[in-house]
Amino acid sequence: MEANFDRLRTQAMNIVAIPQHYRLVMEDSTPTRDAVNRSFIWEDPENKEWTLEISLDLTTGCLVDMHVDMEPNEETNDRADPKGMGEEARKIADGFVGKHAPDAAGLTWIHTDDSRRRITYREEAGGLPLPDTGCEVTLDQGLGIIRYRHHPKSAPTPEWPAVLVNEGAVKEQLLCHTHMELQITALSPSIYDVPGTEDEYRMVYNPAPLMRFIDAVSGRDCFGPEHYALPSIHSLKVDEGPAEAKAGANRSIAGWEQLLGINPELYELEKSSDDGERIMLQYRHIDDLEDEPEQAALSVDGYMKYRWGDKLRNLESPFKLQIEKTTGTLLRFHRDDPGKEQMLSPLNRQQCWVKAEGFLREVFPDYASYLRLEVDKDDLEDEPRSREFFFLPVYMGDIPVNGERVTISISTATGNTCLFSGVSYEMLQQLAEHRLAPLLTPEVALEIYKRYMDVKLKWIKDSNAQRPVYRLIYELVTISRSEPPREFVNRKLRYIDARSGEPIWGKY
Image (tube, rainbow, N blue to C red; front, side, top):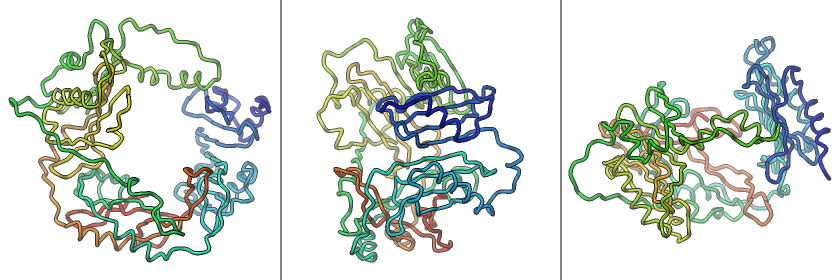
């Protein structure tokens, strides 16, 4: 049955009060391919940041998604922080869900997160929530609904198993397969429960594998060993040669342009900016035309062009680069121009690596001192690719630096470097100066970690089955013994400090 767009628009306009001066800037079926929703966006013409977004199911007309970013109401938001308004907030949310969620009567598992003013509604089985069911509702300080998201159920409600594997046996099984890996990581006070206000690099032990899922009926791991296997890491060797200058330290902008193949006869600098730490440069074709095809009024494409046109055009720039100010090194390079020099036959992965390593020698001369090459089994498959990607994690000696790696992409057609994503050379120098070393052994760190390990039952949705089904599993969790238990909140123990033995907890 063909959707009645006029009816859906009228329905959307009656869900919440839309200020009279707001204008409709998008109305289209989404996603663009295989559309299932009708989506609307209203905007304050005096401030593009104040918007109201609503999506309705094309077939049923039910509210699927609502996102409200409107100017705060001073009268209602002058209230004290509503920690004591739980009952009122719950009543408002219940009424909204009862009106708009078609399965509201079956959403019997309800959880309130006071810190975020968010209430979650789920179907349940055996007292445990079923993922990808129900909805979430978020309220502002004035107890207005500002977020709503409904999840259509796609798997049948499961029966509680007649027999479960012993919890203690599962815990022992997980303990036997857990080990501690030494790494250097940046601890941010906004993410981790650590003192101070600035990020700090510390040497820590990381439990591995961090997540395991054990079938609560069979006692077997839900995934095979290959699921937890990480890519192998190989050291890099370079031929001994004359000492080279530090990466890019004395290279001018013109020097970078020459090295990176930015021909001044074909390209010109379009934008240049400086954030105090990096210089960012963006180029365009000299003969670029400004004309762009017109987009249909109110369409998704038209809205994207209107709202983020400049940023989208930035993505299409033929060359972009970032240079670290303190060291003069290349932090990032992106080439969107494919180049005209086509190879007689596509380069294979090894040939692309030769190109990538040559690029590294130019922009990061002492790369072999800090980087290793990651080799995944998929990389060894002999299949044609338009680009070959190489990932090089950062190491200080034999110790990995968590979250820091270099990425290089080579075009198999031209041999050009399409992408280089580097790391701060200043950060590498600082880490090298500190020469961090552990005081604890992995075995001692594991004994500390074991004090906080536990397991809990949880439903997961198996979407890999022929038809999606729910499976009951034991999930590895960590529990702080010094805090009162909080139901359905799992603040994870992330690391053990490799020098002090201090447990380092995530904030969320």
